[in-house]
Length: 381
Image 1 (cartoon, rainbow, N blue to C red):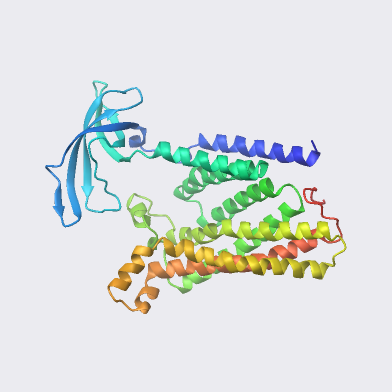
Image 2: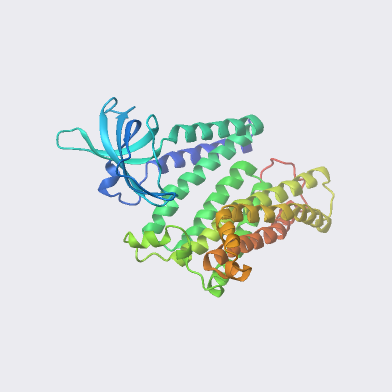
């Protein structure tokens, strides 16, 4: 095994160890209610006598009798209430035979009590879907797929166990956001791209694009007179007692974090292309090498910006349909704060995509200059 390959595997083991360590880390003190037990349960009977129906909206509560299907209370029965708020995006109606997730506590007699419904049980299917995704990655991409899967898990754990808790603890969203993106970008680009000039070029080009996007997001958020409360649950978060949170800076951080994945993707495409081009044509000149990289970048940029547009707008299909149905003019729609926030998301993110191409081309051209860039070779000191 080559020295560079050994370093890559050692790096992956370190990332895996950090990921496992973060899973057992709790930076934010959890409330007492968090200690309640969760269990899969089957609905044995349903009482809808208290449910009030107004057109398609249901309120009040369903009374359910459930039987636990696992855990220390397996086989025990419990009567619980399914509270209906009248909001279809949150409410679920259950029928006899449904399998649901139940949250409950224990009484003084040591028996389950105070049960609450937490939705149809989906955890097993979600785990199966993640496992299928991992198997597909391994089948298609082999060792690179393993690296990508580890990067995927690492990103999820870092965001959930590190970034979000740090925001709740009052750390500055922008500096923490840039730091987290730098960490994730380094792990992803070096684990997938390798410890070589290609990985270094990808990291440098990506961070230059992210920093540019951050600057634009700060400026345009102020120019658009936007604030972070345009995001779902932001106001609820304030009412939960976090009055000192800077929602506007959290919104700005979400803009460049959301586009960082696409930025990394584009940077990797360009860096890999320039590395392969230098390998096949070691005598290519510096300017011609950069022109070739820019041609690759132009081809990819056209589809990547459309990807951002489709990703953001598709999550608001119902909103656009409502505006059209009410016959409201386009000016009303485009001028609304929550729509302007998505426009900022799309366009500022697209600015980052457009600029990361020349950034990565420049860095790659300098790193590969005067060297025979064999893919997989270590970066020069």
